[in-house]
Image (cartoon, rainbow, N blue to C red; front, side, top):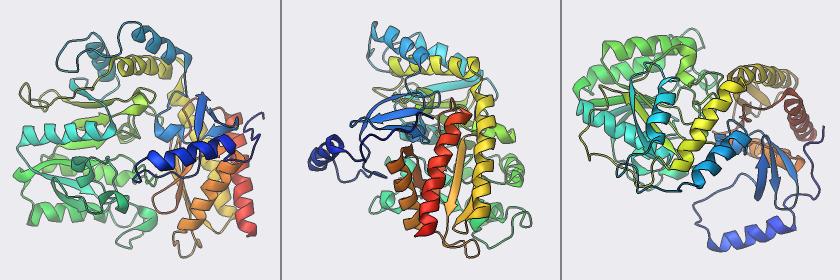
Length: 440
């Protein structure tokens, strides 16, 4: 294989100079998994400023679902660029791209009767979903799950809890009742998978029975698969969840920012369990990384008054053009099928590694959203945070981009266009890093 290709040990001289300047001017709130300085990208290959070429197993943070700089997406953006970059803001003018994209989204979302609000990011899309739910129900309490990640603006952050640094010293802007997520590898109740009937939902139902009246609930919120940890619930969880939302007449607000747009081999993550949420949020993976947030709700749910919500830069025409082209690419190139095929192959390779190395724990995922836990031993399952961080760093040094998420999980989410040859090349890099770790 011609990739990866490392011509100078990263970070090279140009990268170090960029990092030096950045450290003088950037907010200290930003963090980086390794000192990588991006220059350009094409499909599944990313180049740094020193000419090193990396295989991208991170999809640019989960947004390059159709690969970087797909020719059809670029053509659509260039065509729109010749017309206008901006059009007086979503809500101040009509634009033919909005109904076209809404019609396209209705073909991939369950129910096919949704209305859409366009914004600029994952956090904005989720906040719009929260507000739409609160307006419709008049409820001000949100039910959620521990370990969720819905964004970093204050409303979305109220329902997030994966990264402590993101919450410290910041107020919660919503009343939230959180329950454990079905993280079966590390069950909060020390139950055995398959034996507990998803006790975590018993906790949620007890809240509804004791101290959270149904009429006060705006929505039950969740990620279909928790992306910061790649935590996949058992099928029984969604069987009970469907029954719970129906019995208690709860709105279901699904954050599909990471799991949507084909990432799991289905258009939406919840399609894997045939769940049809009332409100769905998607974002940058729809538009190949051009800032976009979309909140789609059933028509009877999105019933707020004119002027009750707005977004100055929401639904940027460049992003909408990219989104329409990206949806076509996924269909034309059969990328849902490829996500299933390559994901199964990659997961099998990772599970073989867990059989070989005692410091590798659970390997799990759906489609091309896969996690591998790094542990101190398979017996104790104690997370090895430093080892996971070092493993991601060693892979980057060798030309593979991936990142540590959760406590000690390495996340694998390459573009849906990935070939088996590139999967093999990336796995060779990973195995070399693992072998080095095993010898130290």
